[in-house]
Amino acid sequence: MSRVSRASTKKNAAASVVGPAIVLIRPQLGENIGFAARAMANFGLTDLRLVAPRDGWPNEKASAAAAGAYATVDAATLYETPEEALAKTNYVIATTARPRDMVKPVMTPETAAAELTKRQRSGERCAILFGPERSGLDNDAIGLADALVTAPVNPAFASLSLPQTVLLVAYEWQKQSGRAGLGRSTQFDGPAQEGTPMQNTRPAEREEIFGLFDHLERELDAHGFLQPVEKRPTMVRNIRNMFHRMQLTEQDVRTWRGIVSSLTGGKRRKP
Image (cartoon, rainbow, N blue to C red; front, side, top):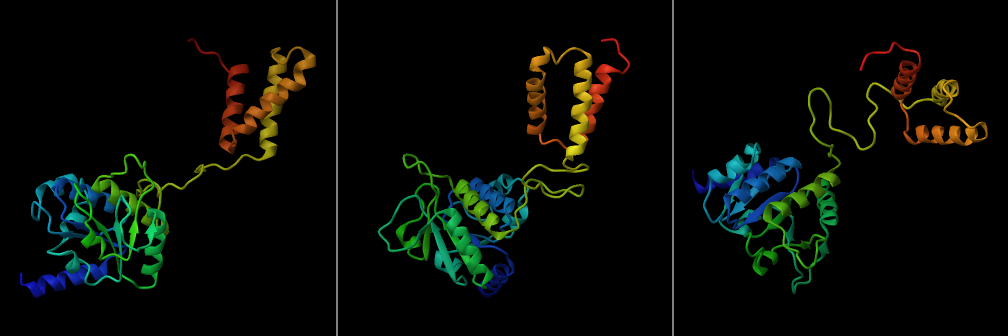
């Protein structure tokens, strides 16, 4: 393929993606490229750009480590220099574990993701730079960026692996993008939502809960549990409070009433 054709392919790939480009500068291990691609796929990023990978490209170890994120690995574009990889971008953030003698904004991953999302919604093309595993980005590469992103980690051990850093930034971007679901989405159910799911049921109404209390307390009285009489009001309140803490659903109430009926009036089975 000619240089012009390669450049055209890269341009078209960059223009079609959603989310910032992930630019790995001189990555050393194919496995780490694959793990980074897997982290990207987890959080909806697709534009992987490789600058002078040490072991060449394509790399079988990268494909093996991607564990299903083959499309991200296969679509990765190769560049000789960071400048070439960033040529068509408008805003660039560099990842680093330590402060540098450069006057640049420093952001957490969360703040950086918010800035990236805002700029992308206004039509800008953005990229995030990641350095080699052993040394991280050098000053020349950082000099190409508009801002720095540093994670709030243990100061005594601040070094993150390359895939860890990609995953952390990609996760924050996914949250800011507004497209995040929880867990796996299948044809039978969508992604999970934070909170208590109420599939095929609903929160119990007080009338239903009061009916459970009447049923339970009637049977407890019949079996002599709510004794002595002077302690009965306190015992009843404690029992009711236990059920209130459960945040009962309509199905829960029906199940508990079935349990009470089974224990007090149902047919006994042999152990």
